[in-house]
Length: 209
Image (cartoon, rainbow, N blue to C red):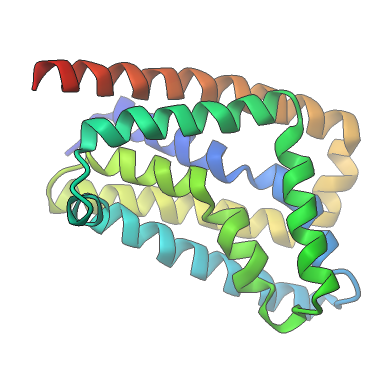
């Protein structure tokens, strides 16, 4: 069973890459015109789909990499750079602009019945960063108990995301533009540090092999 530090680091990594507070205003944007019941249905479906996608990569991430002949240390380095890029976008508020563009595309194409799957579940919840982080973490969570713990962490993160969707109007009103900006930058700095650690561990493993 992984240590508490490993579990906590996994929780922080996944939660930061999903970025529930940053999704709150986007959820309101792509569901505008819907009543509370319709928004509730969308939030449940999006959270479930996001969980299933990320759980798949948590359990079968290593197998998926092996199909393409990619070693886990190599993926650690590549994934670490990707997470660092996402952290850079968060600190300089470029990620939010990109997400809003994705949301706008969904609205203009009138995909109201499918917005739970796109763009909410994929790529806003289970995006490249979250999937990369999940695959990276799966390398440190070997064995049934460890994988179950990782899936449990993903479930907790998606429950938090669901609650953010349900309370999105209040959260957006409480945080405001300034609050969202500060929180996003703070999470970006934390993610940058975690990304550097992934790269360092990957390089160390590559040199050892």
